[in-house]
Length: 366
Ligand SMILES: NC(=O)c1ccc[n+]([C@@H]2O[C@H](COP(=O)([O-])OP(=O)(O)OC[C@H]3O[C@@H](n4cnc5c(N)ncnc54)[C@H](O)[C@@H]3O)[C@@H](O)[C@H]2O)c1
Ligand SMILES: [Zn+2]
Image 1 (cartoon, rainbow, N blue to C red):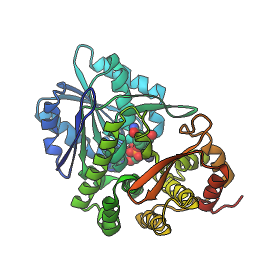
Image 2: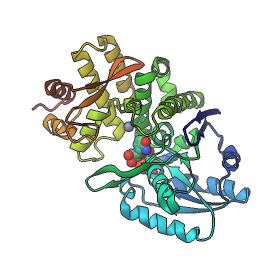
Image 3: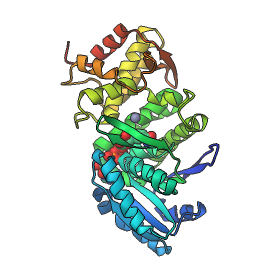
Image 4: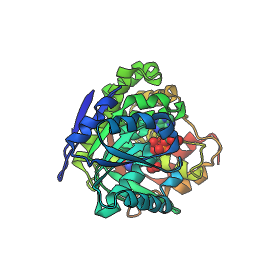
């Protein structure tokens, strides 16, 4: 088991990572002085597979817990579901002190965290993430949000959990595509901050993909550590430190938007291709060596991520990249790798270079 502490101005919290550690979850809950009445926000898929285990664990220790289910879709991050959930919670919590457990992937984490941030001007919540994406990324750092029709994550706040508890055994039931989706973010951490994590992935990919316990614990704990250190330096995403987490995301988001957020590309798949496009720009300006860029592409490919975009026109991706919210004051901003383990933020990349980069990742030509 690994314990990572996040130290923030107001209050810190622990990120716990380990395999078969669920038995210790209540101990950690008690440490944070969580309420005796708990609402577990989840979806039917996760409840069916893991629900009984959790509820048994909590009730054995005398905790009064209740499930609140939302549908298994990104659409649950909506105003409607959010307020339905708040009404249910208010009903249960009439005269009781409550704690919320976000039990699921990033959708549940973002939604339940946002609900916790606004209900009664904020009640405590705990992240109990069940996807790799949530364990290495969304559960850590306090960005909570719901979506609007015009865009994702547009209504939200910074609201930190009291605890993040990453039980890696949850990943046993995760579909392969979701695992690979999360691995794109792990590769991102390696490229932005940690060449030894990158080497580890190169040398142990088969073990990671078959969920070897130690390998999985290592990559999740290391990624959590990297994200935690970045969040500590720039909790509110104002100083440009947290911005490096967007490596691969500028064009990645454009690919997602241009394909209409369909199931064609998961977020991780789009970000993987986005990293290749960002590296193309790095190469254009001689920021990264050819061999380092090739190594990154190879690792993405071996992980099972696509390296090119099929069936979406480059023109559409180019158009979509203009709507990215990182596009500020009329100047574009890219996180570019200079080596494996090191990136820099560059503003004002010429549009011709961006077009060329997008063309390079599209099988369809203009
Ligand atoms: N707050 C942040 O910093 C942050 C960062 C990254 C992503 N996000 C958000 O996270 C969301 C995506 O999260 P995600 O990738 O975890 O997707 P998700 O929450 O939709 O989960 C993916 C799928 O896996 C299923 N699932 C989850 N755990 C499972 C398990 N253990 N076994 C079997 N099936 C399981 C879910 O039911 C779902 O169908 C997006 O809304 C995104 O905006 C937020
Ligand atoms: Zn991402």
